[in-house]
Amino acid sequence: MRALVPGLPAPREDGAFEDASATLFVWTWAAACRLGGLDGADAPPAPVLDRSLVADPDDLLGKTLAGMRMLASGPPPPPPLPAQETEVPAPVIASFPLTRDQIDGIKDAAAEPGTRQRPSSFVAASALAWVCLLRSRSVGVDGAARSHMLLSAECRSRLAPPLPAEYFGNCLRPCFVEAATSELTNGDGGVAAAAAAIGSAIREMERGVLDGAEGWLGKVLSVLPQRPMSVGGSPRHGVYEGTDVGWGRPCRVEMVSIEKTPGTVSLAEGPDGEGGVEVGVVLPPDAMEAFASCFRDIVRLSDKNV
Image 1 (cartoon, one colour):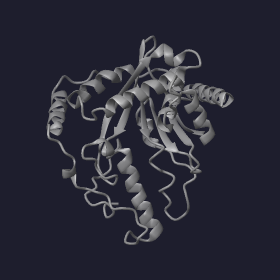
Image 2: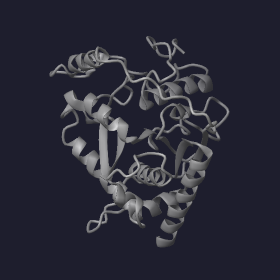
Image 3: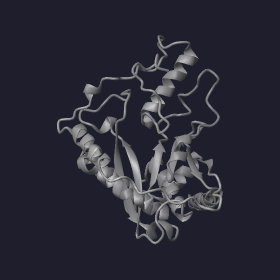
């Protein structure tokens, strides 16, 4: 692996690098297997390793590291809760496919009133997952007036100047989403409310992608007790498209790392390349049944409204 990407650090269980870089690495590895090397015209572009391309005039790196050192020097974390006497069922992983027609139905149902502007596939699928996780009581805090979501926003194209798509390294920022819990969990408008909140947060972030960076760490830590939903992956990453090692497209791709972060869902494009989306979740069996039931009901309702 290191021969493909010089300087690649040893992988860690909690993830050595973010989704876009992980996908680039797998694409490069798959191409090397499929083509017998990376010297031909069909080889993907080489990863870009030049860290000097990232402009940091305000020393955000230094400020972030200082904040992390301050956090590390604080009091120790509270002791773990006593072990439960009853055995907790092991979580299970499942993928929920959405065809192109189904994701279009979700987009139509979540379109902004007045403008009828439809959300992206990422926003629509994230909104659907957020509502179903809340209704299955798998994220959020019982009785809380507000519910939260954390997105890791890709910054390569949003920086000034932008970074090349092949930049290999972490280039993310947190995007904070919140909405009234009652709007997400009551009635048939939950997905539309969730999509509106996600879209608004993304637009606000794009007005200044590095605005408020000094406070990101503290804000993330303040939100975590609220059991936010988080999202890994994206339908744009092409995990099916680019991972042909010579045997054809994979039949199924799962982001097993979500098992380590409760409340995280994974998103990928559909395996057939026809514009669908796959939503991956890891939940205890009872919660998974509740999530699946909510998912089916919302998709069925959206199909009827198309």
